[in-house]
Amino acid sequence: MEGKVIRIIDKSYCCGCTACLSVCPKQCITMKEDEEGFLYPVVDDSFCVDCGLCEKVCPVLHQGVERQPLKVYAAKNQDENIRLSSSSGGIFTLLAEKVIDENGVVFGVRFDENWEVIHDYTETKAGLSVFRGSKYVQSRIGDCYVQAKNFLNAGRKVLFSGTPCQIAGLKKYLRKEYDNLLTVDLVCHGVPSPKVWKQYLKEEIARQCDRKNTVLSHPIHEKDVRVEGISFRDKRLGWKKYSFALTLSTINESGEKYSFCSRMPFYENLFLKGFLHNLYLRPSCYACPVKGGKSESDITIADFWGIEQILPECDDDKGTSLVLAFSEKGQQALVCLEYDKSEVAYEAALKKNFSMLEPVKIPVYREFFFRQLNRKKNFQDAWETCKSHRFDKRIYRFLYRKIGI
Image (cartoon, rainbow, N blue to C red; front, side, top):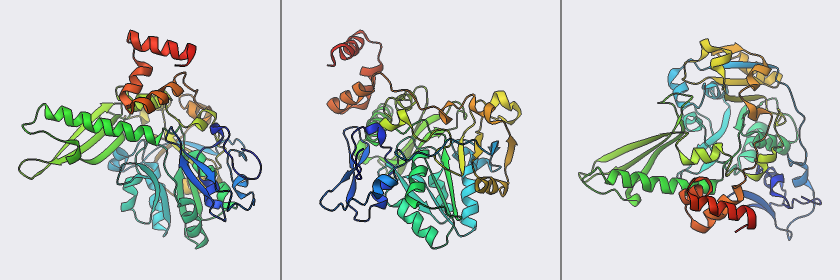
């Protein structure tokens, strides 16, 4: 980035938070998708007045300071159904319900009608259900920063949840503190490409249709299938051995709705394996500017990995949240809730939650993966070219590293 206007020279310096787009008084910034499927700001110079606001609100250029949490808890929602549908302990729902009870508004992440991941808001408890559960794709913020500011200025309480860089972007965009704003982020491993997710989902639907066609008396065609539900963290096999679950439906020969669900443990599912291998994360994730509490959030929530060693009596393999209060406002919000909790030392929580402080490393074959994906338009082929132990694939990777083919 250079000068008063945002210019993306090195993509690792843009987290895609859209604070620059939201603050632009001339609306001359748009978000354009690159060849990897990530959005980056593009400035229309014919409308730009060089006010410099886009640069002033950038959370990468103006980073916060590292912070230590005031309190750290192992926590669980007492409602077992909420906890089952949540990624970890269901604490986000408790915080959100409290804000809704006070005539507030909650911003979170949901799937849209195309099963792409977006930010949105709700003013009802029923609307919170779509926000529960992790979505391992970078969400589109859209107008949510502007909407949140309008609610805040109208005196409404607002809970805004998102990744640390999204919370940092919101804080920079607002440019002042609001007593009626509660910000909640998560311990973030990194955000995968929406383009990769879209391609993977398309192929996975086709695979599931092929599998059903081998056991049913009538064929199932992809065009006749509807996605009914997706969970990146299905707990039917347990919290620690979570699965990717895809529920599809179609109309059978009798005109009746027929639904079928596939579940695959995370260590077998290709999309989750690629995510956990850091293969298609946003470039800024490998140099994350908001680790160590620098997002300025009030509360951070995560899975409490390692709970079975620290507090084995609290571990029932149904999900335990790690909850960190980074501000007095956040601590007060947690005090007002009814939930099962145990205070723990910050150092103990860090032992199995490395992503709180350190960004992930760039995989050797990241660029190679995207090159293969864009050439073949096939997620599975690109994955296997990068990870397969077959001799021809290993030779291909060797040649790529040596001469860049």
